Length: 386
Image (cartoon, rainbow, N blue to C red; front, side, top):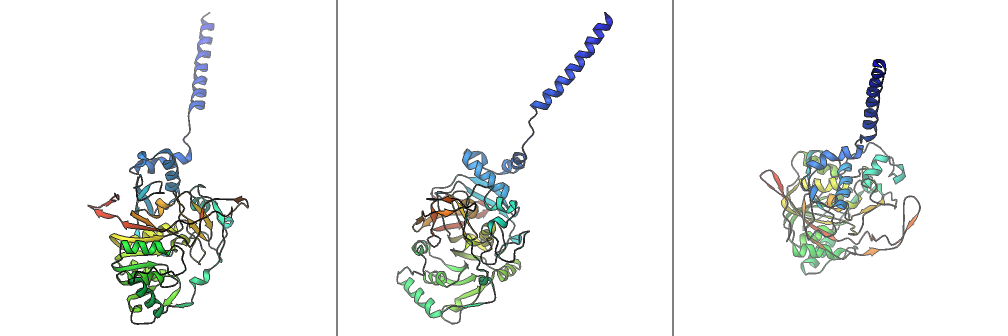
């Protein structure tokens, strides 16, 4: 009998041990890699808990994709003027590591690549973890980034400046030009401004006509402006030259900045630039680095406030997901110009058709009037518009 009790006791101990092992094995929930990767930075980002579930989902995709040089520090509900945004952002930038021309990716291409040629990491970053649809729209225009010289006509600039001063909105071939005129009429550019991307001096003429005193244009194509009336007020440099001047502290600070139909191409390789999924965002933050606190940015890009899209390698269409990243560290003062939608079918990269997507005609772009956040006691101050 004592032997039987001892035997039963041993069996009970073994059974209890095995039961504990099985309980722990099947009830332990291993943290998912994505969630553990997200939990720390999201906890540290001020305002995350105030977002709804949809906003948090999109924000989580952006925070895992965005580069280390663009660390998100604050997220908040959009102000009334920022209609179409899912949220607004403040980010901490490293100006010395940002570039007007974009940084080289780990993959080099002799000619601009198709989307299918990119590695999975780049595809994920371009689409915010697969949340932005990709359409075909391949173009190779890297000759713009060569040794050819573009010569501006000062007589044409003079005509545009005088027409602007007479109250006429100069049409330079962009169907969304009225938005640019409206924004500058309501918030006239003053002092020294920087123009980002300019094949012809239309924006330069508008800026001078509305009151700017002098301009620095950053353009891939080498450009000469012979003349002494208005050309002497315009200095044109390449992105490489701008980066060198910025590194030495000799670029800016500027009173205002203008980018019309340029930024949506950055980082896509279309113009021979580097492949950089956040080249557009880095370029705007580089502008912020050389812009005075409270300085204005007149930014025109294809914008569909219902949905985002990437037409690779032609351009981006900015919607609720990517607009907050593009306009980070800026307060939205207003949106000017009509929104013209092209609902013709587009071809997805997988070959299927998607109709009525709501793509925006590339040359019809609303102007986002933005104001750089000011620094208060070492912290970013982001005033909301009433």
